[in-house]
Amino acid sequence: MSRNIDRDLTRFKQIVRGKVRQNLRKYVNHGEMIGRKGKNVVSIPVPSINIPRFQHGPKGSGGVGQGDGEEGQPIGKGGQQPGDGMGPAGSEPGDQHYREVEVTLDELAEMLGDELQLPRIEPKGNDAIVSKKDRYTTISDNGPDSLRHHKRTFKKALKRSIASASYRPERPMIIPTRPDFQYRSWKSVPLPQSNAALIYIMDVSGSMMDEQKEIVRTEAFWIDTWLRNQYDGVECRYIIHDAAAKEVDEDTFYHTRESGGTRISSAYKVCRDLIRRDFPPSEWNIYCFQFSDGDNWGEDNKDCLQMLIEDIMVHCNLYCYGQVESPYGSGDFIRELRNLTEEHENLVLSEIPGKDAIYDSIKTFLGKGK
Amino acid sequence: MDLTEQIENEIKQLAGFSSSTPRRVEVTDSDHRVLGIGFVAVDTMSVAFESMTLHVPELVGHETGVLREWADALSNKVTYLLENIGPIEIDERAKEILIRSTPPVKLAGATQFYEVLLGAQANGTFLLRRYRSETGQPGRQSVDIQLTHETLRKLVGDLVETIPDVS
Image 1: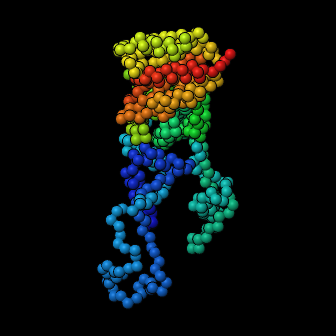
Image 2 (image 1 turned 90 degrees about the vertical axis):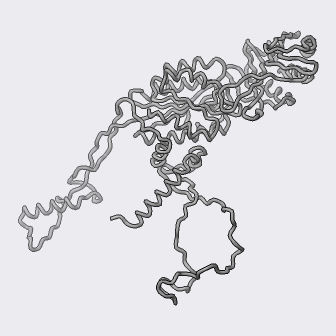
């Protein structure tokens, strides 16, 4: 039976979801929630949700059903009453009040999918990787008291009682003994999993400023949220590069600033080796997301394109390249990649001039359903 | 004659020149330093050029530390252009330093900045250009640099003066 509070809670959640959905573009573009991310939930500041609540009146002012009033008489004094306030209410709206609400990452991913009309992802190949999960589907004679199955224990005691002719229908009393005890038990079942490897590559050269990195961080958060919702097991790897590249942890990825030049091919080498070493393409759905201002140095573009085509893109479900605009504008690298898009349909390009373009960029990247 | 005097003479000879195709002028001093400027217009007061190069033989093959010294000295000395300049990227492997306007100038729908490339490789040690980048469009176009004769003389002088002593 559902309780009133459950209905109220469901309705509250609907209101919150509605508010989040309404402002999703803002949240996506400005990354307001990223700093509030927990393990599985995100706290979101949602404006203008008024929560009704009871307030106690002054002591001795009577209670419910007490006092001089007649039945049906309105509570309180009717009409406008003079008060002790500082004057009439202002005509301008006050400061917006925000309330932090928690939304699970799965819910957030669903909202993102609905809002951007993202197609469900079709994993490539077979669900090759198998993991074992415990399911409590069997019964055992041994086990801890916390797992005792009372109904089965009672039935077994009843059977024993009838079989031993000690059962008296006119005075039915069953006392289970140790051999009657039945316990819930588990069975390990193999479950096929679709696994995804997400490889993020970021240019951290001197021309990539904090604002550009913030854009990358925000976009990566949403991509991560969506892909984790689509796959059972997601492995994330991070590569940063200037003139040289290296694999780093998530924190370093987002907070490193180098001053070196830009050689994108160095990152491609690390990415290629990473795929060869850790993610056999037959078993993994591989997604690469590269972000740079596109200001590649020297004659590096030729090496980049060769490596990208021959060693990386052939193994990827999607190769996404986002070119963010630095204070010096947007570089040439995206032009080189545009020449490849006709032959390689898993290559997706997006130009991100500023924060407001993040929303559309995510749609571009994930809109293919691969 | 030093590079400043030589380039001054060249400018005098080019007075009245204007063309969409740059005319490259090269002068060499006693230390075999070669200054090259691709002029697109020269009048009695000012010049417009698309690039300026300076080849400094004594810096070829040196480590980026020497270039860094030059980059810092140059950034501190050259403060009279449209924007200040400063080192942005240092490529140890290629022995190159990228210097740009800090910050670049924001125009309506575009950004313009100076870019200086210092390199210790055999094919060049100093290259100055100015670029324009349209907002929301990838790539950038080279734009002409316009300086008065005096400013150009000062720039060439400062350029030579800040070359690190590696002897």
